[in-house]
Length: 286
Image 1 (cartoon, rainbow, N blue to C red):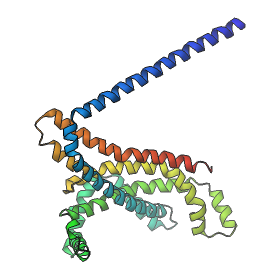
Image 2 (cartoon, rainbow, N blue to C red):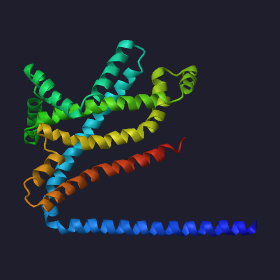
Image 3 (cartoon, rainbow, N blue to C red):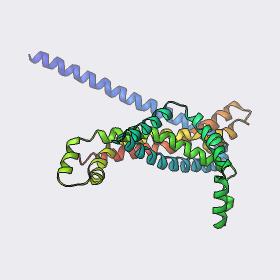
Image 4 (spheres, one colour):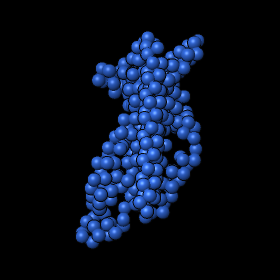
């Protein structure tokens, strides 16, 4: 018996020692890879310093587009989720149709339809977002801030938010339905109204559940904002292509694409960290 225990103990020690060796080997390979990557960036430091202001400016534009689109998408998604949970058949089927049609068609096609379809119809009845924004900014003596492709920005943001609103509709619906119905019944029995139950009982728990998928869609939206380049919107992806394509040296062209990808990473990775923090923060009470 003691011999068996000794054999097991020595076997476990050998396994642990091997795991430790593999850990150190992994960290060594990772350190070499990171060092090689920074060495690669340093070799193109002159181009990095030259192009950095352009990338930074368009990264800001991409961030603004994504933030506005996500705020509107959240509104569309919440309204859609309420429609999916409505007792009225007509409202419920309108919400279902919205979700299924949007999720079943390509986002690029939707953006083109918003810009050249809906935008064309609205322009024929006298609605021109560029003119409205230009006049408003003229009043503030800042009309130079209105870009020539403002209509592309406007309909691109509407298209992105409308598309992601359909996906968030299902996220919010799932989060609301995952809350135990017994809590709702108990709150109603205590005299709370339906809107109070939703605001104080259901939504706080649903928000905690929907944080991971919500963050994932936000990160994906930042990346999909690159599709607005098809609408002549100059954002990070458009800027990357405009700086990379004229290059005749393949190595420089590749570096410009990698440099642009690093800006996308700088925008998306903090969202992942924020999501983990919020999950840990809100899980304390449960």
